[in-house]
Image (cartoon, rainbow, N blue to C red; front, top):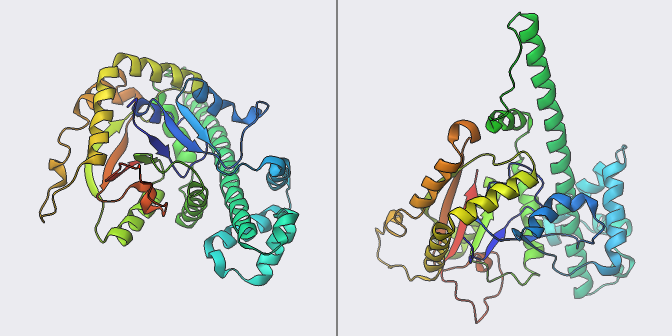
Amino acid sequence: MNSLNTLYFPGTDIYSIRQYPLFLLFRNIHIIKPVEDTPTDAEEQPADSFINSSFCQVHTPCPLGENRKRFLHLVNDIKTRKDDYAAQLSSLTLAAMSRGSAAVDSEQEIINSIFAPQDLQQKGAQEEKELKLWQARLVLKIGEVLDLEEEEIAGHLAVLKDEQDGLFKALQGEGEVVDDEENLFAELSQLTEQLGADHHGNAKKRYLAWKTLFLESSLQKNTLFVTTSPDSGDLLQESYEEESGQAALNIGAISLPAIIGWDYNEACRKALYFHDKYSDIGIEVAEQLTQLSQMDLPKEDGMQPSTIAPELFSSLQNSVDKEFPAETHGRIQVTLYMLPGLSGAAVLGHPRAESQKITNGLLMIIS
């Protein structure tokens, strides 16, 4: 899908092997980051690999500039402190984001004094806007920290379980345990078993924080919004239904491999190979999706979603099945929705640009 403008949300980083299959669908994907990068950010290495391979295009609306170091110092403090200071601070920030302008005055004063830049303590619309952006960045950055920690812990637990199973088999005299290195999905399944499900409330806070940054971005012309968070996909659909008075249309689905590589170098290599080998199919699908975003749908009742994009992913599915057998790579479900009459940016509250040609938003949920 080389020419399709695609925006990933509400995630702000590529940190997990579970995200890598995204890049079989998209040759280039836009990502909003809460804090601008510098060349010395070693922790951003996985995302940098995809950036260097032109898979990711990173945007940071309203860069922090001189406040960047101060913000990252706060994030590091939250990450490393072992007492209840970090929990209290993060809870306060998340509460402020979820309640918006209805936050209690005393809480707002605490927020300002603890982590808002000093110049934000002055009254005025601009200061209030910058404070909300600061809070949104902090929610998203805390989310990144939690994701990485959970992924690391789950990885350790999966390894321990593997070793424990091997020990039990050896004690039971079942002989040498054979490690099936070709079955990547078996290893991924062990990792996934150790991961807890996202809490809906936390997903909503991150979604709202991401929306705050998005509305300050210049990404309103993106055709396709993609998420690996079903809760966030549901929230966008709910917003569309409230705005338009109708439900989003389910117009297609495809199954992707659950894993394409155990590290980002392997994943990049396989994704590049896949795009090169099946470039004609990718271009065709991108063109069809672009046409769907610009088409005028009939107004009469009884329109069947299946007639809008028949066999949209048929050739692409065959290619995926050929290169990544389900037995060794597993499968995840990808569902495509159309938002007739409104672009994704319009649903999120972004003013419509006169040059915008998106008639129908497209939403892809990967689960």
